[in-house]
Length: 382
Image 1 (cartoon, helix red, strand yellow):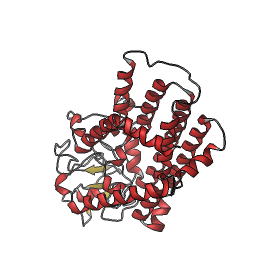
Image 2 (cartoon, one colour):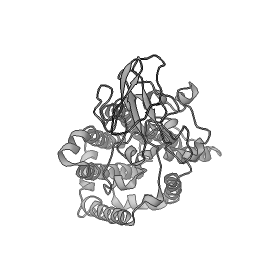
Image 3 (spheres, helix red, strand yellow):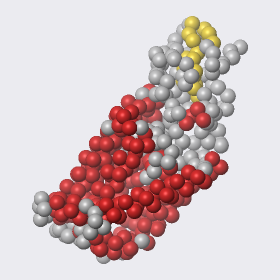
Image 4 (spheres, rainbow, N blue to C red):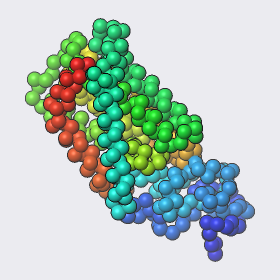
């Protein structure tokens, strides 16, 4: 009989190195046994069983590569048997459970800090960027627009500038966090990206009907409803990385998460898919060259982001990411269709969670607030 302790090594006789053991389901509805389950070859040879998160067996993975740190808080145990085989049973999760929000674990003080931080950020954004009398937003827009009289060129340049800054800082995240710390780098990242994003959005709103009209399909009766549904669904793909708002605002220490459940089962890059859906819907409806320019820039940025994101996750999470990558796909539903992704019977429960409820409310609110958003953009005279 084999007894495993997370603080000791136990000798067992097996002949080839094998994979990974995980126990303790990621949700309240277990998908695999709650006690440790080994996955190994029946052949025998002398090997050592080592808990990967507590000991220094680095022949297989670094201690920080396999699982994010919050797995320890969830009492998930991981054991490595041997050093060479990286196969893992398909019903075993190596990534994190996305959109998992435990209300009982929330601290009122954290959300008070979040509210204060949000208020301060919006105040600074208004004074330093949005207000034409004190901010630099109009100067920035005028500088970009002076490059060409074409609104298509200005729209593309604004998107390109945002993409370079946003993805560039994301690429520098690892060395930046080592130099400044996670929270300070998040403040730099958000403080730089947010004004550029707002400028790009405002310019699009104010100039979306400029340029050359390429087609006019708004008279088709059913088209608006189809595009509205497409746009609505796109927001469930667009914002999976913002599930933990406390990390976004640097109230909690930001982490580079390796999500695996929920929307990630459909596509490993939901923001890319959501952006494509949003761009297609708006471009079909508006039907002009400015919309095409904005869509080309945004989709191009997200295509690069998908490649860069995979590269960064591979560096940060190592073999754990390779396992998640093998089970997922960039193109929606591809991994499910070819059998690499097996959906749990209660898959729908991964969407019946508070973050998705919030996304639903915000998406509907943004739709009905379109007149307010347009009026606010027009007043900026950008």
